[in-house]
Image (cartoon, rainbow, N blue to C red; front, side, top):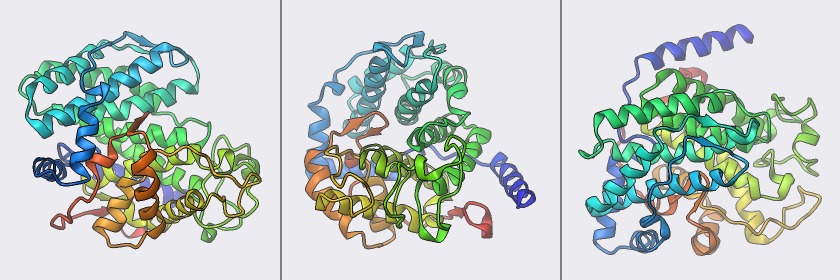
Length: 387
């Protein structure tokens, strides 16, 4: 098995070296952004409503607050998160309105962070913070890279900043709960696309393969999930002592009854979406795993019951914009019925979820009701071996 794994990784590392990156091709594609732009112009819902909400938010007018270092345990963390979200918000506003005021402000925020040297907390909180803001900064940069006011020199400086400050925090997987590693993976993939970095893109894919089975449980995996660094060799304790092991259980379901699981789910779906835009089908080989998690968590939230899997049967009250990307792919692109997820989005997420928290930002605007675009060549990871 070890020999096969080495061959598997080696084969795909070679293929990744020849990869031509598509831009914009992080969490958003050009065709999808253009579709949303058209829907907004015609006043169609829910896009126009989501756009108006974004345009009326503080992120639409926030200026730059770049720092040279980030203390992930202090005020710096909030400043950097808010700036990342603002840069992305204004890049979207520019794209959808063609108003260069938003473009200049987004570029100003990005440039203000080009002198960032690193993170100083000295713990895995730095890795989590780098994941939260790295994915969002990269999403903004991927849209703005085509604007004439963002010079090639400034783009190069921003790419160098990612290599200098973010790679050291993202290239080593956190051994905390799995949402942290999945957030790191989301960021590493988004940055790798912007930096056109085949090696880091491949590393993120390899880590996603491992973490998927160690975070999203299927009964076909066996009596217990696979072991992973950080679990202490005791998955029962690492998964916070589930009362039942059922399809769709996540490593953090019983930790806090769905709070952190939304961040893990949203980050995994982001990574799959980024891969999809680069012609790699992570979604296909994980359809059962991801959709089971979505549907189980959705029915838990809708019913007000954890369905007998947790000691505490009351789900978290927190709702996040973590669902739309996966729902759009599996239901919108592939026609998979996800009744619980659909109902949850309409009844609770659209009504209650904040539109930007950490690395979960504006998915309801960018990924609602996207059309089935012409089929393109999409490669499953590992060829016939699957993901």
